Image (cartoon, rainbow, N blue to C red; front, top):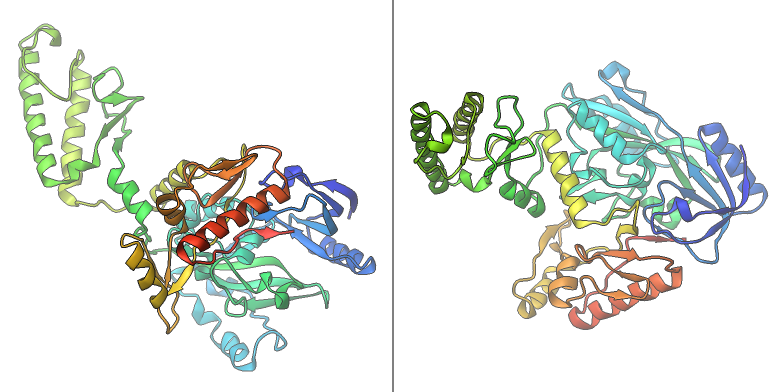
Length: 468
């Protein structure tokens, strides 16, 4: 273990805040973690656990304590029930009925259609997601391209596109700073909430996440009902990259970079019939080509192809026409695969969010407000078009309001900038450090946004980011 003094944290937080840790150590295994905690206890230092640094707002005055950079690695895929570790639930952590239930029914939690994936806290989150998708496992795909580590995903209860990480967590292994002991707790113990968990509360501050077990499905069902995902696939062009697909030099009118693109509007019956008529024109065009020395002599108009000078190009286009018609006739909405959904989400996030490797940001800075039915009705009286979604499983109906809509459509704040800080032009939930912004600048700007939302809508909005 190598404890450093006055470690610069600028490159270890995605907000790009200049801050210094009084003491800093990287831990790569449990023994080093124990040594680091012992060091903190001996010197009466508070402990701060750092993952990817993608959800923290650091103080300009520095972090007065021991910052532990979590780099414990390891991912295990368990393929059968006999591979599963015996449950090790402590009575001190779980009430007796829950403890007994967990021990007696642990095996029943995992069916033959389920694979348990155990990942260490220092693993990069999106690397884990990518591996699970490559193995054809369902459960984490909607959480693609979220920065940070596995450990932080649990602390934050990360979520995106209608999915939260708590939905697939079986157990969490933690290191207790007070007792220096390792124990496992269930997902229920973690007290997950909207971007919240016991690890962010006083009663869980002494617990450091070291491993997480996820129950993923071999034959799951994709969750694609989120608005952004639906719009992506509705507007997505239909690409063919087959070796028999038309090539760039086959038709300058419709081919780009070796990919032929037809709008998804072809899924609609009327437009698809128009396409078939165009195909018929193309066949007439081919007949004319057969009677001509070059396609340039053809007098038949084809809206899809201007020039086809090789018979191979013609064959590729015919192959495309027949395969496209077969795909469309089989289903109006072809089944989306795991990889396609992941790629879609990555493209959506890249389009909406700044590149945290280049621009100072922590992604969504604010939480979406959760309101009661009474509060919602009052808001709808004033803003009839306000989007809202049912939230949680509480007996009392609650609704989530997209804060981005309020900031953009009601307050018209999207893209606003003050000095070195602003709201991102494509997603107003995101605060951006345009360069050299301080902790005070960012916090003051964020508090102004809170105040404006309160004045206009009466809603209190909370920070999603964690302050150090």
